[in-house]
Image (cartoon, rainbow, N blue to C red; front, top):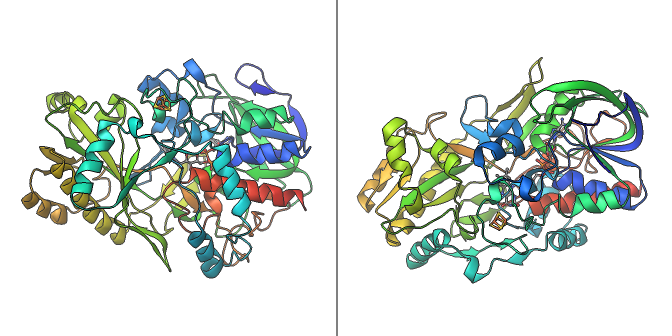
Length: 504
Ligand SMILES: Cc1cc2nc3c(=O)[nH]c(=O)nc-3n(C[C@H](O)[C@H](O)[C@H](O)COP(=O)(O)OP(=O)(O)OC[C@H]3O[C@@H](n4cnc5c(N)ncnc54)[C@H](O)[C@@H]3O)c2cc1C
Ligand code: SF4
């Protein structure tokens, strides 16, 4: 059953065996595994349930309704926009649908360097394979590689840079182009379409428009969750109820899970630390002929020439991936106002765009104010910024080779590149805080798993240190970047952790 708490308030007190906070890749999968095994499961989700035509393709309305903090969550110094879903099914509903698995070298590193010796490639093989099945992972077809993706591919290939057309989790995609604000024909095989229906079928209950604000008695057999119901738009809290549970699974996204622990005063000094944001920098390229980047699959081609695996740091280097945003998000990213902004937006049909994705070291932190506001502290390190410079140059050269008249990095002021000579501007740009529209879509860490409490916030089974049966099953556990994209890794690790939970 799916209950919309905005319209049907739950009882003032509810007792369940297991409560799962969040309904995305981690929460949906955990609920599915546990409910199928006969556990009594309640999923609590603060977002709404929106599918099909309710995903209206209107960017103002959809960012407001489907994204955490209405799409406006930022680091405290405003350097990085933190994009997260806030809807039944979580980030999978609004993500770019790229499927990149959790590979063996990452797990080897986590065992070798971070003591997660049970998280072996072999132990996780079945769960990783199952994640790809649940996603219906399939290659993006050649006829689905849009002009926006082709220009990056043509230019980078001409210069000899390696790249590939990605895999995705779309089935029956009609190329409507609004994946990042939800698919109105439900073509994405995301948790809302796969895990949640299966969990409900197996007996799980879902509450939407309900926010967990505190977990009490975390070291007791029965935990008490303070849950606030929200209004239909999710703007205001409307009431408060309690949920009593034997087992609590945090699956509220790396930032949300850590924040809830901090807010509840649970756990050790590692809670809220070791956050990785894997920030991405957009670049735009203006072409004489129309590109119509907003039509079709926004992200299909990746230049992976400079991406590699470092034995100490894990996934490293950078990759360049085509992307296109809806008009509202592109306009908001441009560093212009007034007539200049209007004139630049008239070029929208001629623009190609890419994101420069840089894996980082987990250096950020999460805190919560007295009023419950989440503070994310993160400064892009010098090595991230150095890689942006290399990535901008590679992207700019690729676009110019494909015929772009100018490439712009929408920094403040913008870096405009029209020829090889302009690349010197990239090295000169100072990259001060909040001067570049960096975005994070792959938050990891914050509840780092480690074999002992002196090194992490949770044990390798996801059990939060200092608690009795309060687990974290999302990417908060990851000690370093799991992949260039986090959906498939989270589906795999949450399934594996949930299956292990059933054996205890
Ligand atoms: C714009 C964007 C594009 C992306 N593109 C890709 C891609 O192409 N490929 C890929 O692999 N990955 C991509 N990702 C990343 C991927 O989607 C996420 O890593 C993944 O969805 C996270 O899953 P999760 O279950 O950990 O958290 P989420 O999916 O974020 O789910 C957490 C849920 O918990 C809810 N919640 C939070 N706090 C509370 C609370 N206190 N009480 C109740 N509910 C709460 C939230 O509303 C949310 O729905 C993208 C992400 C974004 C934002
Ligand atoms: S491009 Fe495909 S998956 Fe994306 S919104 Fe359109 S139909 Fe849906």
